[in-house]
Each structure stands twice: as C-alpha cells, then as structure tokens.
Length: 444
Image (cartoon, rainbow, N blue to C red; front, side):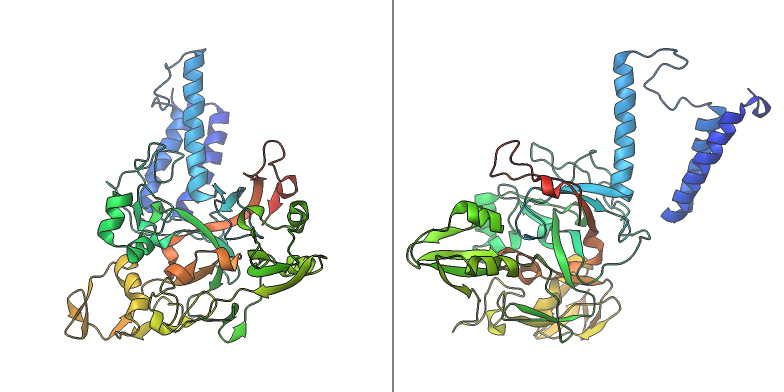
C-alpha cells in the first residue's frame, strides 16, 4: 500500500499520537527519543512492522490465551509508564504520621508535584520496587543512569508531606529489612549485626525503601527544637493539625474505657495501662485529643513527656550521634540544612554533620589524616554542596524515626507528594469493620 492509499483515519490517528509523543519527548528533554517517531508513524500509518509479535499477523480472531497476553502486556506497559511519570500507589506501614496519615492508609502519590525522576535503575521487574516475595533483588544494576528530574508542578515547600527514599536504606540487613542498618551497627557492631541478621543487601538510591514525613526544613534553613517546639529561622513553626506528642496520663487507678479512647482517636495498639502510675505511659495525643482526655472524670492529670539531656549529655541515637552536643529528640540543634551551591568551612567539629552527604550522596572520597581533611586525595578546608537537602519529621513527633535520627534527605531521594487516600484499613479489626470508610477518597 502506497501513502496515497492510506485511509484518512490512520493519518488522524498518527496526528494524535504524534502530538502526544512529541510533547512527551519535549518534557523528557532527550532528543534521542525523537527516533521513536518512526515507530509511531509505522504503527499508525504504514504498519510494516509486526509490533504485536506475540500474535499471528493478519488473524481475524485471536484465541483466549493470546487475548490475555495482549491485555497483560498492554497493562504492564501503561501502568509502568504511569508509575514512572505520573503517580504511584503506596501504603503507610507505620504510625509515624498519625493523626495525619494512619497505618493502613493506601495513597496515590503524585510524581508531577515535584517532577518525576528518570529511572536510575531501569532494569526492574514490573510492579516491584526492590525485592521479590522470595526476598531476592527485583532489579539489575547493569544499567545505572545519573540522577535527573523532569519539570514538575512545583518544588518542595516547608510543611509539605513528602514521600522519599530512606537515606539510610542503601544497606539493608536481609533478616531485619525494616531496621536502620547504621543504627543497629552503632548499637552493636558491624560484625555482630551481619552475623545475626545478615547478609546485607545494598540498594542504589532509587531502590531504597520509601518513607513519608513532613518537610520542616528547606535548603538553607536553620532549625532548633526546644522542649519539643520547633523553630525555623528563628520563627515558631506552625504545628500541623494532626501533630501528636506523648503524654503520661494519670488516673485514679482505673482504666479508661477502650471504646472512649477509640472515639477520641487514640491508637490502642500503642498505649498500655501502668498500675504503678497509675495511668497510661506514652499516650500520643493531638491538642484536641489532649483536651478530651483531660475532661474525662477518672483522669487526674497529664504530663508532657520531654526528653532532656542527662549528666552524660544528649541521646547518642540522635543525629549526628555525638552526645557531647546535648541533643535529644525534644532539644535539638541549631542545625543548618545544606543548600546547593553553598560553601561551608570544613572542620573536625562539623564533619560528623556532613560526612555522609559528601561521601554517600555526592560520591567523594573523604579521609582525615594528621588533623587535616582530604577530599578525593586533596586537602580541603571548605566544601561546596552539589545538591539541595531537606529535613523531615513525622507528625507523631515522639513515635517517629525521622531526620532527628538519621539526618538530611538529598533532593535526588524525593519521590512525590501524597494526593489522595483511596483506601484505609485497620489491621486490628476484621473485615468489613477494618475499612475506615470516612477516609475513603480523602484528599491529603
């Protein structure tokens, strides 16, 4: 068939798909993909190449098996394309963001909010992130692309809820994959951790496990926590509506009715009654929840649980893991969040804050020798950051392993922004009572 004999509907189809494809190539910013226009032209107009190779060419009616293969391949391609460039489904695994996001919330996360990342590890089994059900890796590092982000609707703003790759997730203990490998090593030793919970699995940056927290510090910001109150650049940070702190709740010796606690919004799986107080230890409450608890007839008082520095200094589990600073989860900083292009003096005093950024995230070799600091073999007295960084905290402030425990989040770890909760289930209840209908299709 010559081009003059091509039916008009094929040309219309080509015009539509060509416009969509060229728009995508322009957004992608890679001229090599213009070669794909030839595929669009052949698929829509000339039809010389048999693109659906799994089907018999020219067959009038396909068998059921081939129809299923056709549908599955189409679904895999479309869903993978959507997951990479537009949005992806995630599930909240922990209570670190309660009462904003609940354990069991299923989210659609927008990749367009901050711009989708071009896959750095493209050889991945569809519909998997980093592991198969067997526990083995679901990807190959044979091809590794440099970090590049396409243009999105905007940038991360202070106060945004953000999904990102867990910075410390580059090394994982296979028998305890949810644990922070570096925290376990600090608490025990590398040899012991690997012997007991290993071997280790190493992930590239885009294959680390996903976390969701609230961004409280933008590049260049200075943060301070005093008595669990956050200040950014000297100004009080506006507490999120769902922010929780832990309180000791004292009673006259009797328990609070579980149904009453549930109605108030207390997570029953995270509270227990202590007859020694008597009352409840570590009850996570928002301000409205606290007021309701204080109004109960058998509650005699409440006390905010603040972690203060002791005689030995601060909490050794708090970043940068130096108790001489006196930092705790509730008294932290001041700490400046690094900004792209910012140059800082390098000293032995501030090196613990930025060592991981320089080595793991920005790929330099760093060593200390004879009291001097060397980067890539050259003596360095200053360092200029190549990326922006962010500081993340959970709304459930006293039950959240966040940047206070592992430091900064690099810009190349940012995944997207939660937009809608499409399903929410409570693991402590049986079906159908486990479905939180009030959260169905709730916008975040």
